[in-house]
Length: 448
Image 1: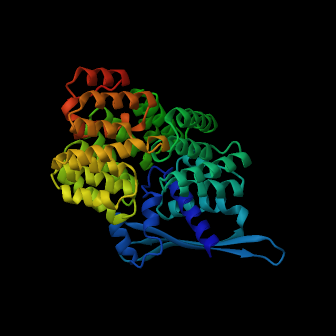
Image 2: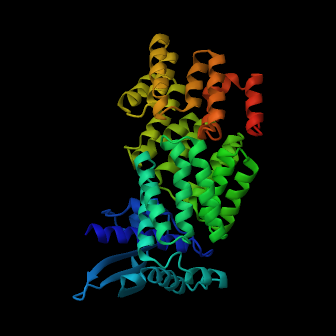
């Protein structure tokens, strides 16, 4: 049933999170695990694509008793991928309220099968339940599911679910971290301003850390606000590194660390961080897409095209991937391909990218028209100021380009710290004293 499928997803994600707490075990992230849900591939084929030696497989069913009580029947099995040999297997038939304890027992059972003895602190973490309230856990799981969609509708729904989880259990640190992440991304994928969303993100992240100072998710949330909104890159990068120290298998920490590193044009470090994120979550659309974007910023255009095309193979419906690919096509002079993607896109941002393509083709009047249309969508919160500036740079209207870069600074727009500001589209103005003044104000220590 749909409800059984939901619980299967929730249990899978939580087991993955708990495995991340065991230093001796490296585990792939939820996006990559879920990529193979309902797949017809054989276990050894799944393992090959994930680059793992072992798979944990299982089933889950809810059972309603005659007295109205709800139980859960869960099976879990550890399989050696090379020959599909079952190394460990267990069945749990318990009240559904025990579901979180079952998750810990599965992790401990698999550790025992591997002859791994968790440390005292790891055992303590396994025994500690993030929340004792089943409904709060259900709402948190729903929140993360919608957060991963990276759409305004998804983020608004995530905020609602995380808030409801916190209302039920105010001490649920993971829910506070999830709420912080949702607020943070509303200024990127939604229509909220950074000045509205980021202070709320910081408040939620600080609350999560106060509740659990060892929670990597919370430190990652706070570090993103520090670096992206408060323009404190040293604290932002340091916070991401602290999160990685707490949880070396948390892909979002490496992902966002790479974005903060690219802000200072530390391309090798950024690519190393994002590669690690991809290694941990090889089928994450968001991480793979931003890997392509960082390659573009580093002017590795052919590699960026391959990476973004691969990301579209994972999920061809994610339009931000097509947006990034169109920008690389323009740099390569592949204007027809770029315009084809723009014509098929529904995001307003495609108007700006199409304008860039028309500038390159010499059709300035069409570029002016498209740019005007894009700017007209600003009241809806659908404009990236740095993108407008990029078009003005292409049009050689440098004064207006700086007007929009200043607007990005005033708004604390997310793209002002990250790969957007480092795209080659802005290279013609990097030696302009106004650009140097701008990056100094932001606190970027750009290497050259």
